[in-house]
Image (cartoon, rainbow, N blue to C red):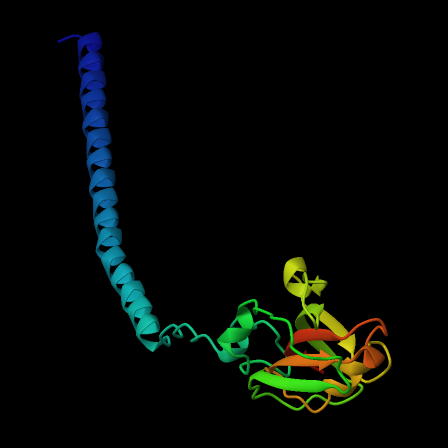
Length: 205
């Protein structure tokens, strides 16, 4: 065998050995990679289980949500004539009254006839009072004035000269929640004729 042939044979042997070594290195690296990956996979469920256990413990320790508060009396809508009259008004005061003329006359004094008995506080002079009312001539005729027709109660200070004398004299001493009939002589009204009012006392402050 010539020298050239020997040299070529050595080079082939070295190339084969190098290829085998490279293949071995690749196999070793692959084995190492899978071993490490497998180890990481083994750890993940433990971490997840720990987190799940901690979350469960926190949930168990947390207080239950508070129940919804029951409505209270203060949160309920105020009734008509609220304030001093709250809860004291008869259902009859929600209905417009019928008013009929008086008999006889002329009137010589103020006459008050209770129609619905109030259960609220007593009205005092100087208070601001809320009313519904209806007015006709005492001897009869068409309705002269009515808060019912306006759909709005009337509010005024009582006993301070802001209203006719018959009201300033007749309303103080009545109870909130009352419906009264007031027959007022001309001298305590507008001076021209006797009057008949039906008055609902809704509130006083």
